[in-house]
Amino acid sequence: MKKVEAIIKPFKLDDVKEKLTQIGIKGMTISEVKGFGRQKGHTEIYRGAEYVVDFLPKIKIEVVVPDDMVGEVITTICESAKTGKIGDGKVFVYPVEEVIRIRTGEKGEVAV
Amino acid sequence: MQIKHCGIETALINKKIYMEVFVMILGSDTCWLLICSALVMLMTPGLALFYGGMVRSKNVLNTLLLSFVALGLITVEWVFFGYSMAFGKDIMGIIGGLNYLFLNKVSFAPGPYASNVSHMAFMVFQMMFAIITPALISGAVVERMKFSAYVWFILLWSIFVYNPVCHWVWGKGGWLGKLGALDFAGGTVVHINAGISALVAALILGKRKGYPSSQFIPHNLTLTMAGAGLLWFGWFGFNAGSALGANNSAVLAFVTTQIAAGTASLAWILAEWIHIKKPSTLGAASGLVAGLVAITPAAGFVSPMGAIFIGLGAGVICYLAVILKGKFGYDDSLDAFGVHGVGGIWGAIATGIFATFGAKGLLYGNFHQLIVQFIAVISTIVYSGLMTFVILKLLQMTIGIRIVEEDEIMGLDLSNHGETGYKLL
Image 1 (cartoon, each protein chain N blue to C red):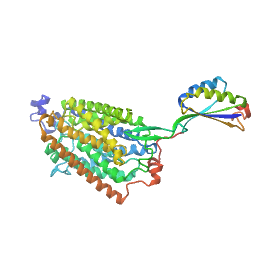
Image 2 (spheres, each protein chain N blue to C red; image 1 turned 90 degrees about the horizontal axis):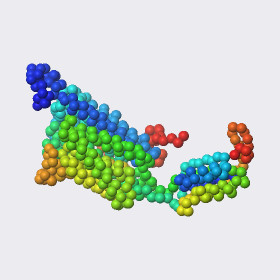
Image 3 (cartoon, rainbow over the protein chains, first blue to last red; image 1 turned 90 degrees about the vertical axis):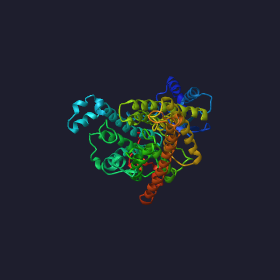
Image 4 (cartoon, chains in turn brown, cyan; image 1 turned 120 degrees about the horizontal axis):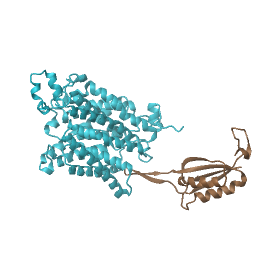
């Protein structure tokens, strides 16, 4: 099993969620996060005073899938989250040692 | 005269005095003054939201409380001796006597200031002004002033600055009033007074830790917009209520208030649009408040077109003032001076230019009025600036006015009040 973690532009969340559901993922967790990459931050102006805001709002998606689905999930996220402009985000893939469904105690891929 | 106005003058002959009293008081005027008192009261919570949205989230509750505590403290101060100091029997034109101590003799009968409403209604209307004025200063000291020091400060400031200056302008026998200074609803008494004190307080207190290099971004401008809306609404009571009756003067003040606020808000965002290419909500809110400040002394004296010019001036001048703050480098955190001080000075001078109803300004051939307005502005600046300096220095030497660095970083909500404004879970 692998955990696919993607940082995307907030407005792309609906597209990504819809496409991932279509390919049959069972669940996902999202969080509102802030950060910067090469895009860096932006400036905000309040009563004429300019502030550089280093961290931009992004959405972090976490999906745990069986090994054979990882490729498809990555492709789907990349395609649906892409605008082609700087700041589209990144995908990280981690190995998952174990998954346990708390309600039943089931372990492994059936618990995903 | 009022008896005749009621059309029952004959019925009153030989009646007991208290009967006359009740007939002389007009129900409509009293009704209007009580409604206006409630409207002006609402401005203080409005100000709390207006300021609260502009600070960082760790200081939001403290900032709200700086306004709300005035609603408690100054109410009591006003009842005990504040009203008497401001509106009691004149002593040499500079202060009221102690004849209304604890509201002694402030009854249902008309007082010396309005023969058409009960003295008590006039007293409570004025109380609301005494409350919001020190609260305005809080905008310059947020995010770093020790709460206990702030409470002492606004109490001493009310006693030694607000009450005397209020007497000078509005008290019977006050020297600025006798000189002919025009201040319809408190441009000098409230706004210049609070604005200058705010500047002095910001200078003595020093900058917030990290200012201006760190991020001092407003944490919730939606609160600020809600507060600005309440201020605008309440300001109809502030200005139109100052006519002390439901009459033409109140109508004029109501109309000019709306015009100046709208014009200034528009002027401010247009200035931003030209200058930095983006009109902002904070700009719209700041502009409308600047317009309301500027029309305050002029409200019952100028024409609707006069109000357009006053609003336009307020939007542009106050915008430039808050931009210039960055050049001088002092930390008037929420621009209490930039908006209330500068807007108030512009309004007081503009009153001397545009006044046409009940008094004549420069445009109507009365140059003398402009001179008198300048005297009122300068004497208020000098007096309130000096007194604020003395009060804050005394507090600084005794109880200290600034919170320790650790508390400042933690935020005043937690360090001074043991609570937080927002909880995630």
